[in-house]
Amino acid sequence: MGSISFIATGDSFITRRLANQGVKYTVLAELIQSADVRFTNLEVTTHRYEGFPGAVSGGTWAIAPPEVLADLKAYGFNLVAWANNHSLDYSYGGLEATAKYLDAYGFVHAGCGENLARAGEPKYLDTPSGRVALIAVTSSFHESWPAGEQRADMIGRPGVNPLRHEIRQVVTARRLEELRAIAEVTGINAEYHYAVESGYRVALPEGQLPFGSYIFEAGEKEGVATSAHAGDMKRILKAVSEAARQADVVLVSIHTHEMQGAHLDEPADFLREFAHACIDTGAHAVIGHGPHKVCGMEMYKERPIFYSLGNFIFQNETVAHLPADYYTKFGLDSSHGTADAFDQRGQNDTRGMAANLRIWQSFLPRWTMENGRIIEITLHPIEMGFGLPRYQRGWPELSSSDAALQDLQRLSKPMGTNIRIAGGTGKVELL
Figure 1 (cartoon, rainbow, N blue to C red):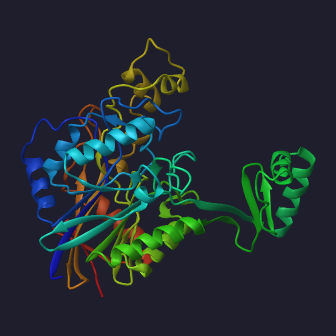
Figure 2: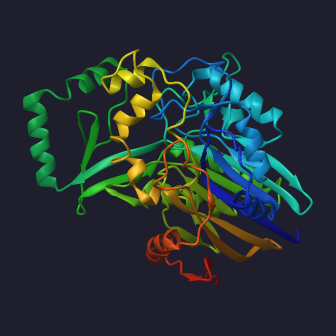
Figure 3: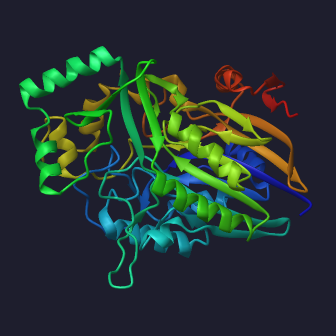
């Protein structure tokens, strides 16, 4: 492999057609198309209601007409992840239809499938500069969404490629005994004990205490500890190893909303564990997205881990239709429409994502590899129309503000990554 270039974005939550391909679009599209490998995360289902709304969703029941894929194609994207917390918003019918339309528009896409083997397998993009593998994973999903493993005697289940994780609340030994006493008095663990005694579940390891839906253990450093699910890690790393022997470059996409406790800018312990393990096994970059804001980046063994690239296209409040469940949540009924629901949720743009400037600022990393080594990473800030009406905001354009890069610089420094900002772009200082 000689020289090969990459560009990546965070979430493309696209629900409207790109009507005005003006200068702002052209400049951004030219930047994206300057790379050999052009990645985005599709965070909507794309179909004509071939599926019915699921009982649960990723927040908003995310659906867009399939034609929006033509607009992603016009930007230049050729590699798409779509394992995320919206993949089954429209149940299995929506999942199957989205796959059908991604195929129809010629995207190489990964992360979902008709069974676990298909959802988790690497997908390959062949370019004149080299072959690239993509493995797409999500840690944010409803418990019923993971794809099921195929057996010789049983068909698998459609769904996402999951990375489950274990959460433990760490407290002092004294606090743990206090919780144990409270549990005994209140009977909060009665269901757990019944399930263990009946053989419906396995008892927790010695030293761990269930407390309702939470797990506590004693430790010197109090707080929340997370670790990746061993079975999922083994399975995903096997796919990384496979891809490393079948392609010049391996990319791993991870969609995650789980951050470090109350610190929404910091990656959870299990996410860093996972990203490091992927690179140890042969991945050349880990591309994170999910929290809808920029998180830090880490250079691990001279390979980049982007813990969150934030948003690229963000149009979550121009979904055409929503199921009754959404309206009920906000005390609305069948006499109300989507505008009423979004007004109620965001209190007319005074709270939530619409009122958070950082949601609408992000960046695109563009990097180049030569003979398997990264020689340059340039960071391009973008903005998506903060303050505009919801039917106008959400389209990206290159930004004259370096606010997103300053956020990235601040969040990356504790990870040992230095970023220089000058002339409207950022440069990652490589060893």
